[in-house]
Amino acid sequence: MAKVGENSFEDETMESDIELEGEVVEPDNDPLQKMGDPSVEVSEEMRDKAQLYKKKGVDALSEGKLDEAVEHLTEAILLNPTSAILYAARAGVFVKMKKPNAAILDAEAALQINPDSAKGYKSRGMAKAMLGKWEDAAHDLHLAAKLDFDEEISSELKKVEPNVHKIEEHKKKYERLRKERDMKKADLERQRRHAEEVSAASAILKPGDVITIHSSNQLEEIFTAASKLSKLVILYFTATWCGPCRFMGPVYKSLSEQHRNVVFLKLDIDQQGNIAHRWNVSSVPTFSCVINGKEIDKVVGADKTGLERKIAEHGSRKQ
Image 1 (cartoon, helix red, strand yellow):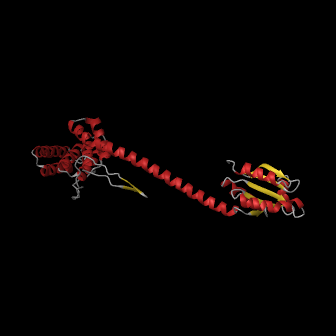
Image 2: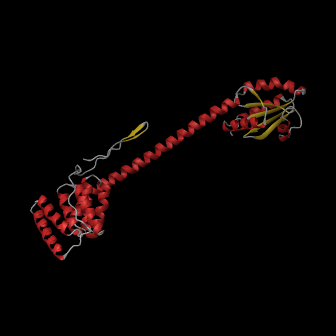
Image 3: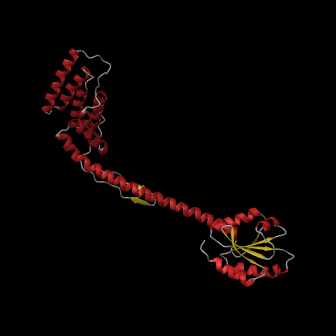
């Protein structure tokens, strides 16, 4: 039985062993067989001698004398290194000897000479199957069957194709789990970034406090942080000379302590006149209700009840 190894995913392990049918052999690491010199000019006499050695090799093979068959076919190849048939024949003997690497070397030599060598594809496919390279084996055997179908190819495909199917199903499962893993990682990364943003925004917004605005940049930074946390912002425009403002100051501070989910800002119109102008503030105190940086409502004057009502109305609103 052949197995595909385990694949580990960070905090979980996918059981990915596949039980595959068929015999797998250890790769042969013998010295490379003799190969012919393709630059040799082959005479008719050499071709005839090569044919004689080929016949001796075929006869030895039929008698089960595999080593002798290899010797005769090697002599034939040295005499006629341009013959794809001779390489394919010796590849077939190496398959029977369970020497897949030697068989693949000869099969590829045959295919280099003749890309349509059915025996070359057949031998290489059978050798690949011996090494457990099931998908490569199936590819070569199907090509061989198209070129010159025989029962041996059919029988070999019946052994190889179930394993290919199992591998394909395994790959689909692996890919599905990989995508799930990647989606989980991406989701965790989004959560991490969101948590960092929430932490940074919370530090800027100072729940329970009234934040005094000193610049437009500061105001924009707070609006951005409040938007990330979907919080209502109350922007209180005041002035030191304003009597009603002095009355509303403690009230506003108390409201900030009661509504910690709301951001309370304070801006002196004499110190930040440009900001007050942009917000069309014509009198103080003015309380602008802001969501996502835009004014959605306002209270003008020292209207404690009105301000409390607006905070209650907009403070729990879905952003």
